[in-house]
Image (cartoon, rainbow, N blue to C red; front, side, top):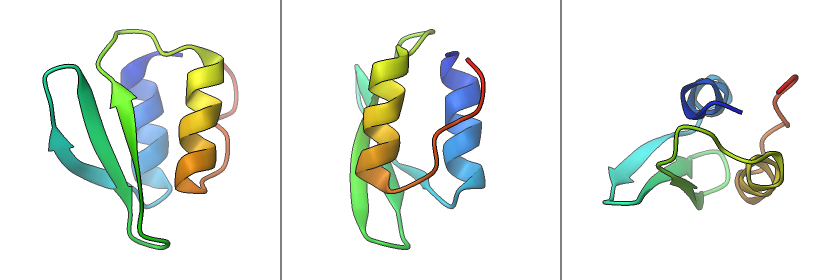
Length: 64
């Protein structure tokens, strides 16, 4: 999955960017106070996307 598409999915589900790092970005879900890191690669593996969604308690993105 493309990183931009995944970030759009997270923001539509109420998460927002907390801060940027060199290799990762931290996203925060204010509904439950959970934080997760997102790698700064052009493509994010499906397993990684599922883990991030589970960490933030958001639905899984449809499609690849």
